[in-house]
Amino acid sequence: MAKARARHILVSTEEACNNLKTQIEGGGDFVALAKEHSTCPSGKQGGDLGEFGPGQMVKEFDAVVFSGDLNTVHGPVKTQFGYHLLEITSRTP
Image 1 (cartoon, rainbow, N blue to C red):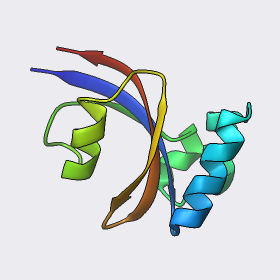
Image 2: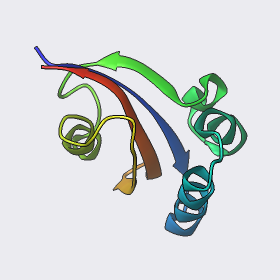
Image 3: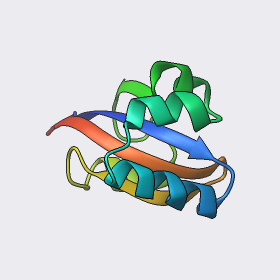
């Protein structure tokens, strides 16, 4: 079964999500920004979600995590929880 590792930053607005993405693309540290801004409990670990398989996260996550480029910041991705920036750190087929 496919497995992936990813980290994310969860915020309440698309605007906040885009602002954080701009900071990261300008050299900002994903982990530090996750610790400072993410409203998800995983923010305390720099947004690290650990390893998971298809179907363990919401479908919007799966669509990105199991098809997107590795080590690239994806988003904003809207879910029922808010807006996410996602970075896929590893994936196995």
